Image (cartoon, rainbow, N blue to C red):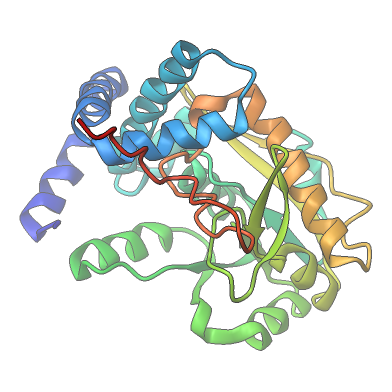
Length: 296
């Protein structure tokens, strides 16, 4: 539980040098790797499914580093949401096809769950003069939820929507030339998902990227955010010319395939703490079930 006092303290540490914050993140990440046994099991199971070709020792190495990056990115929110715009711009930079951000057309930004996902949103709303919308999941802790809302609303013209706001509101915003920052690569349950391959494994995936792009008459521009020793790089990829195609399954499979290719370039920076394969096709076993101990 995050208290007001804890949030104030967190805000203060944002003024420490980045190297100190990253060292703190390393210590916390390694502690979580050792102590958060169930979450470590989830991470390792995800890696076993997605990287069967790697040795178990290599997967453990990636898992350990994933906890470190996760904690470092969490500490980085102390300056991302509380330091000056000049501090942010000194530590975060756009790379890649940046001219894609100059187009004046409806756009869905595909922003996968790499640890720096909030960094990408912050830099876009700080540097790009567009109206942005995104969809978020409410937090159970009211203080933490208010802090996150404030942090994500710092710059620009932004609208934070909940899933309950419905498709019509989101599509209307897109058609009015607001850009949608979409993170559809988690497991949101079976109700609105379809099964498409992800690293060769059937994964329940919401087809919202394809549907919003089609309904909003929008193009899709992916961005991926990489944590670096100096801060972050927010890479802008070329707009996709084959999504939406009119076939939701094909579009969603393409999304997962391209995401897998990006993950392979920085596997420890993806959000492996999430149970990505929780929802299974009928008859398939639970990926995260612990093996039963043999009877003595």
